[in-house]
Image 1 (cartoon, rainbow, N blue to C red):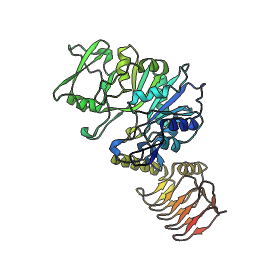
Image 2: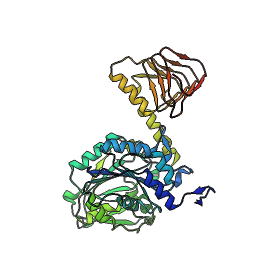
Image 3: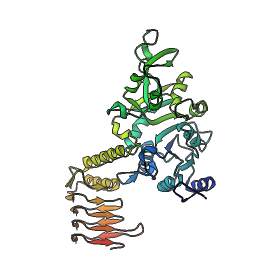
Image 4: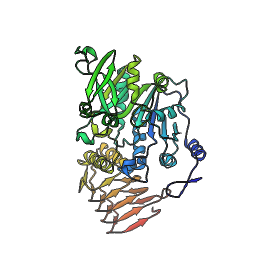
Length: 422
């Protein structure tokens, strides 16, 4: 082992790859889809020693939320998770799972290189569809993934990009811009049927590098178009980082990427231009809710995503559960699903959650349960009907333990209960 910047022992390349092999499982070669999750970056602007991929949104690492949504939306466990900085921390957080492979990108040389590394783990005979997702898109839902997959299947093409519309200040829009064919080309000729087609994605830093007042030229289907630097910056449609490809052209043209850009990296986004120049078909699909396709590079955006996750949970439960403060509570996603399942049984829930209460994963609630202010429930805890947990109480178990509190029990003010309880 060698020392990292903090002075701790860092695993060698050989140790990392050996452990990743242990955590990997074979892909399902009978499936027509495989997902690649890009989780190799650290996120310098978030200013944290924790991997960007392990920052939590609503109680779960962002990369884990992405992996779960992708598996449900694509209806396959086939996933290749590309890890790099803090590789083992990210891989261990996700854990071993059927049809999940971990690929190691030792040097972060761009998204194009990350996909190349991932494809080394896909059989050459695979001729299905490859879907690519950023690991920091922690608000992604299975429904968004499902709709994107359906759009790709219903609109035959070689490549599809999922786009969003940025609504904030232009100066804070760090996303790559979707550049589309305008009304007419440089000669003044009408663009005709090509109007609105995607020409390329222009990365934010590459736009900034253009001289002020300069015109940027791009070609599409034999015609030339130009755009002012300011015009490119003001484009609102952005690249979410979610793509779908047919496997054969992806493999064939990935090798044509170069590092002729500001960051001197292999941009996966350059494949749009390369595909267009090669006569392949590129299409775009728009996200219905831009919040579900947000990524984060700063703590402030991460906080916005956390707030939206809370808002989403409150929206699901507000007519079923009495939540004292919609801005100050936590109910883990799996507990939310359990509550919704109870409601589907047409039962009267009468569940109440006090301000600041925290109900973690593994907790099961029955009808009539009352959770007091600032109470914390963590672990495998089952609360039967009409259990009352007073203000400030803390209940907790280890992974191996189980706590069951029987019907009509009251746990009084600020009690602490831990361990196996039957």
